[in-house]
Length: 253
Length: 353
Image (cartoon, rainbow over all chains, first blue to last red; front, side, top):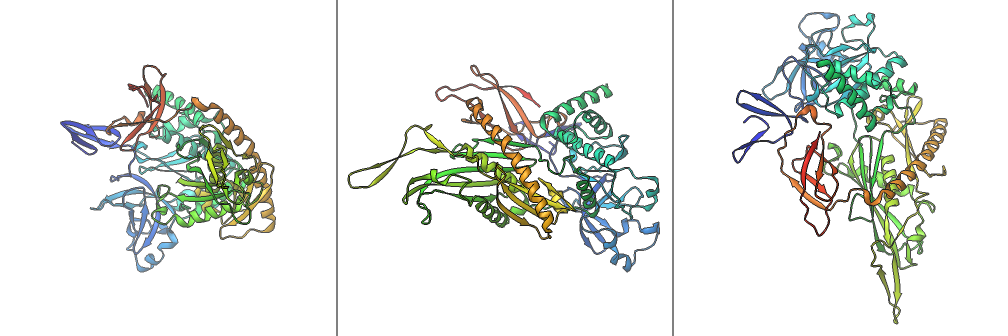
């Protein structure tokens, strides 16, 4: 009787293809291919689409564009004060159209639009790296979505299906708080790791394997025997995913 | 073409990557993405082909009609191109949004084929000055993921290879009135020689280097691109510069040389593949029957790969045939091979997920 179902002559039938969720007598079907439905506390990655008065409009793969209020971002230097008119005018200096940010969902408006905030040092504008788009339903909900993978790159698994891969920052960049984006060229070895991870993520998404740090890492290790550009070929993709699935089953068993 | 937004930092990352010859997906600057080609997909055309290059999907159909030859060249047939950017490809093509791009693509195709060697137009002549074959090449863009020109040109080559033009017989009666008869045998047809049909290679300039087969993100980082059409011998039939940026003459020369090299290397494997596919012939699945499955199949998410459902369908006589369906359509049509006289009972025995 829940979402995604309908009564077909006394039989409850699903109207979408997806996973069945049962809570006591309420049966819902959560579709596999869907837009992101936000929940408070989710980590999302978004792209700025508009700069408006006192807020930014962020595209997060949901039905409506999310909103990032000026009062929800950290000022440079970490000051705590009321936002002035000058701050409003300097908005574009911080975030422009096309920029990527990582943020957390603060609340949900009545029409379903999300209100985001970046009031923590780990959130903010994203620098050099690669964005991978997958379906929101295959990103596993975990305690933390920021991982520094042992293979040499870092990953942010946004709940909205946007996954950000970037080279692990050195210690000296930590205190910038998201304002300084380094334009230094990334080393070739880091680039190879990131490209390989990107192809692995696409392979996992194509086979609907749940994405979390362990599955990504196993897939990476399984792909090491192949060349980076071959990972997306269908036969090789199947091989790698098979091995990843086996290791995941062993890991859980 | 559909455009994606890219941030400044991502652009810098992509440009440095191209400089180091390692693109986002691990390809080198002159590598193509995974390509899948299928011919003879549309049954009511004389030749057809479908190609997917990464996520770019193009469908080409060729229809041969009898028409009047052009006044300037009375002993030759001709080709007519029409490109339709379907609204399915990207929301920008909704309504008349795709018309401009469609017209640009058609005009480029006319330029590419506007020479004597690409297709033997004399073989399309039936009666000089009166009748000739006109090949209407219709291109349908199903999905847009960068590099449209290359995909379209390869699909056209495959479709022309697959084209079967019926043989005609001209009979003249006493008053001199000519009648054109098509032969009754559906297999009595002539094929086109597609050896010299050129393929288009698009090179996008990113930073100081150029890349072949750019994705949409890479396109957003490039300001200018060069489009060259190359035959299998390395002859260039058309060169076009696209984009708002400028290219200095040295880089144009470099890009042309690279394009010639890449284009030449594309033809031999393509022809081999087309000939191999044709030789598979009857063993490929033929579509004859439409069978509807009602909606409402619930599948578990961790078992379902990529929205495709592979069923093994068994019947009494034939061995199980694997058919793959798209699971996200509300009505799933199952296409089965069926003999004309028999009614076959088909049972879905196993669902492979």
